Length: 468
Image (cartoon, rainbow, N blue to C red; front, side, top):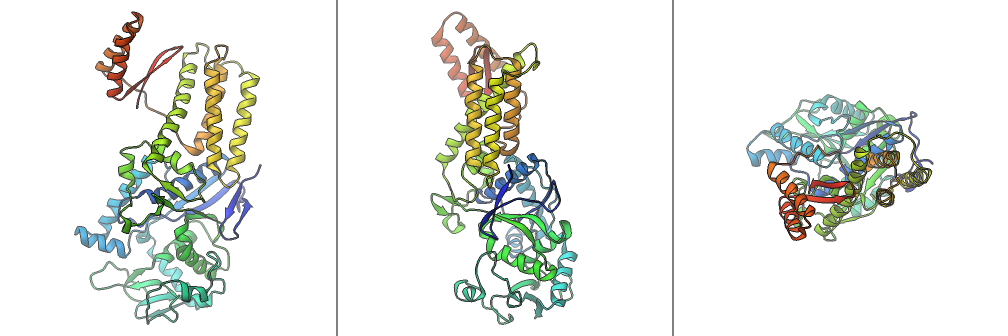
């Protein structure tokens, strides 16, 4: 088997071959930190976390970078609105963003470079472009000459003629051509700024990623990712900047996830439907959110509804219940995980895990990979019902599940639950009621515990409880 990735640049699925064996350099555009993460932001965050997880599962060492844009026009306006500094705005929302990442089960990036910490690198990049004739200064602003770069538009499959008539651009008399984009912006009075060869100012949006990629990952990376809204102009401009300077591709593989829609409408603040991740996390566990995001192929649009999340929650509960029951049976086995699993179990597990990898290696087909997880659930439940199953069977089941779950992260290792005195009293009372065949009282206590957020599971090995 070999991993194949759909490359936006070529519009085809290509076998993934990193530049260095077993090492992957990956960059995903991060947030402008002027507000809380909304559910649309969560899709690329989870998608590319999954991509990274799978690359690591295949034995690769992944150097994964995602940046923080911690100064721009939106942040300046937010600072004015809150009557604090731009730096304070950045710290506030970076902390909130990282809290959301943890709540979504997303692993920290290898590095999170910030614009304000990369200013020298950015200024040097612009200066080199100017020296090569790809950038020009006018009135303290510096622009990129799109007309000088012959391949401008190759990623988004647009050309300059189409852009002149099809793209709305703000008319700026200081530009040689209206399709040119800003690399450095002269500071307005009172704005945060840095010194540069062109005067006081700050970077344009597109230049930061090109400069950070070259600084921390080198001339050419293996994978560049982001939402499809970044394809043009952001990623197109990145290509133009870097390739004009280095003469080499910025990235060998370009990946873009499709939009997430609310009620079949593209997410837009003007529609008032920018749901915040922190609010959604307060209602749904991370596994349900991840399941929802991965239940559709990353290149297909995904429709966000409460019903979809509720359905995802039930699906994850079914997976978690099977995993928990298998762990429980293994813990009860006096002999531990000694011996060998039965050939029937090992053969079926091998087929399930192999199918999981076949699906994942077809451009990260997570919907079908999740189907393989449910094949595991069915096998787990059959094995749990088999009184002849041994501890090695359950150990093999857990090992196979762990391999798949390391990629999708639908369930997490729960801390050992400790019951309160009230819960222990009710559980003991229910056990006594069942012993005395007082089924009505047993059902009443189950309902009382359910109201307290406690779910009971009667198994052949005894009663288990867990929190909702």
